[in-house]
Length: 319
Image (tube, rainbow, N blue to C red; front, side):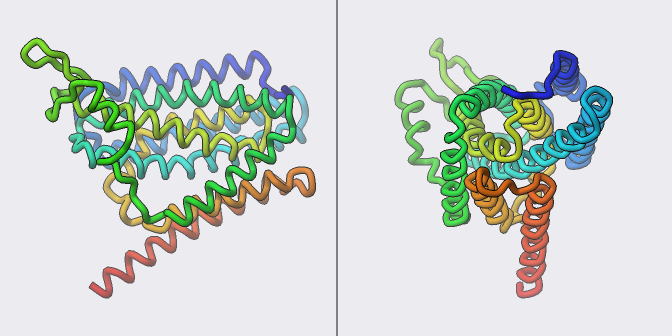
């Protein structure tokens, strides 16, 4: 696998991730039972984005001095493009989390604990899947066509069923868990398991956690092939993914109260997936420049956000 990831870059990236997770756990108070304010979520969202962009700048500086300006420009652009794509697709994940917490009636002050484990699980799953995907591409180039077709089909399905909400009441996994476990109907603080009359019960918080982890896996299957359309360098793929994930909790609490305002965003995300799928299918015919891909993705997301806000404004005028 060809990669710019020297041991210095891997060590630096690992150190940054460990420090960021430690701050999230012990400074921000990842496990404490409390409500996250909009101001706090906005502040930390800006901090995570700033750190990610600073990493892109540090990567460019390191590569510029070690392998040359051309490679530095290319890899830094790939990182930023991959980060934007992963960040945009993560918005759909946030919408699913909102639906899950609403279904299980998880109090806002308990949601942070579930998302903490959700983010940690996502980091582990994506790391494994990215290295597996990079190895497969290195061994079997034709698998890029499978990834491309998968993304195109997924984008079409997402567009077609954008307004359809899953029926969690009849979800097979939820039914299986309730059949094979004692499940309490009440919460017990932040506990995933509790005891009643000496019998161990799973709380609704545990069911929410399981569904969050499953949703992380499903979205990883969608989003990881998308970034392989931008670059097959495992260092760029992994770092852009992880930096996008690390800011997910803050983004969730930032969007939690305003998600309904972006009703058309899912259509934009679906079009992004279709565009990336086509880009991957054309990879041996015409290689769409990374800079152009970045501009297209930014334009689609920006247009869908603008259209959502315009739609909301029109609906308010008519009501």
